[in-house]
Length: 331
Image (cartoon, rainbow, N blue to C red):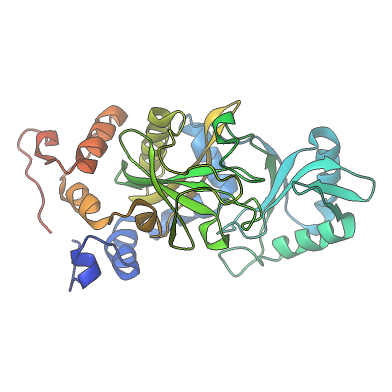
């Protein structure tokens, strides 16, 4: 039973704070036994494939220092790929390469990273420097996704993604994250990326923020960040709802890349999604989460959950989605 204790002024205005997120939603709806399913990206990839969700191809996994030569073999075969810690968070430790040189690998900015520096970085990843836990980690080497051509003037040196907050299998809020020169081509807001709020029904961006300040245009292209139609929007909501329900976590962030060749592709899942998405949308999560919490049950059918998401976004009553004999729960 969610307590929803004393409500601050921000909460009264609809803003979900960290304490409420942690206690009322993450602790209440995310059993800790399921955390490894999303914290370990290798496991997440397997679960996504089981659910029929498209994922980047996994080229290999480096589990200890003696397997580092695997990276050289992958580089010779694929030339373009991403290296990331299996248990990393916030984009820490991720490296993107798009070419091979005599002395090392070429990064997206054109600079060559020497093999000695690459091995040092891999050792740091294996030691758990970028992981969420205290122990050692693994290094994933996977396909570098090519962003949809619609983002050619909205993403600097990297791949944009869509973050969808899914509650009980129902999408409740989304934002588009855009890489910038300041963020070094990464779509991470705390590193200088742009977050653009998205109308959940239409998939059109409504406003942009960078470092919590409102922005109208992308700083590197001077391209408007609002009124942009996110490609394949219905498919994105379908993917987020389907996987969010399949994974067994009630409150989860689903990160999706719209790939030029594969369409909507799962990037990763987050059992502790941040609350900056509210700033990007200039809208609080709380009024969107409470009606979903009050539903005694949520349909198994994805299309019905998307219908609930649309009605909820519009502020409509969800009572019409009740099964015969059901009544809304009250917090």
